[in-house]
Length: 406
Ligand code: SF4
Image 1 (cartoon, rainbow, N blue to C red):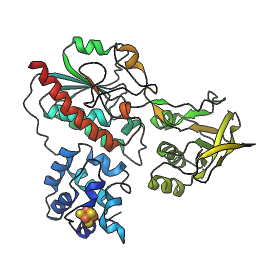
Image 2: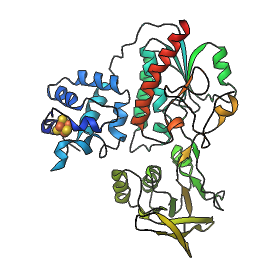
Image 3: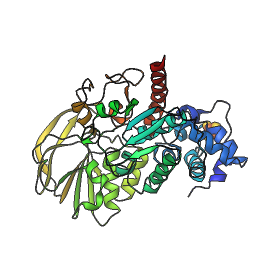
Image 4: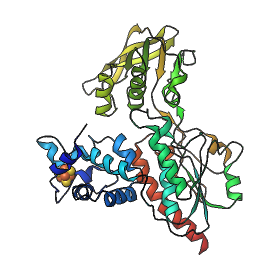
């Protein structure tokens, strides 16, 4: 456990704070640390939340090594300030009692489809501006990827519950278990008077390997597993195809739930997961094998061939010899794309070949008044990127609704 006060004392209060340059959402880190040192935790909590409503979440799940802490000047010769712990302390202490100032109601309705990071951000931003906001979420509780894609040990679900309470406390309506594109469609929302609609439905469709054996009974997609790990019978030997962050989350979830041998198989020579996540997965007992190209999956486990690489680490072919891996269960963790329900049921709503919604520079989709942000537009990215982009889109939605009056 990092001693937060001692960490705050180490900060040099740099005139040109490199930490801030490393933060994708420009958190005022020196100011946050100064307030903390001066005992003004509430003040720090307020401006952190105002800049990034998900600051508590980001303090836990951001890749701090690549962002704020990775840029801290003290890291050049020693240890950077442990900024994430300070942010976590403040945001944790302040979330429940913080007063969120909202403009008086303007009576205009905004629909937010999807209660993930982008949807939560948009809902808060629009409510602050005085809009009457309803979140429609296909699942029984909001949070999206935060609840159903990030394991409990990295992000406790109780934090998302607290956000849900906070949202309701400022008058945001949440309609759970409601898939737009099912019984209700976007045209129903338009009919009912929503002035603008935001789509933040994320990426929930696992990408296939497109090799034989993917439909076998002991083969599973990572994102489905993470949504509900308790419903899986695991066995002893586990193979995970993929070595990104989702694959690491699957490995660590499995290793923390019993005695298993878990190996991740990456096609390339390195993993694109966060360094920390790789180290923690190894610490939990996972092994990683690189340069392994899956050719099929059998009942007994996956079959690979070794990739051949050039000097730059680019795969230029593969060996002929097959490598048979014994695995009771095989997990496929090679990324996700969006589901297509909304595109299929909404006239004029267009997506790219990979299913990502097409938007202009204001975040407006190919349908007037329908905006989108987050993973459904960018592909699977980080929480902080989704928040940053959603904040911009919220301003554009406000501008759009105002333009309807003029
Ligand atoms: Fe403090 Fe490091 Fe930021 Fe400088 S770069 S203000 S030392 S946290």
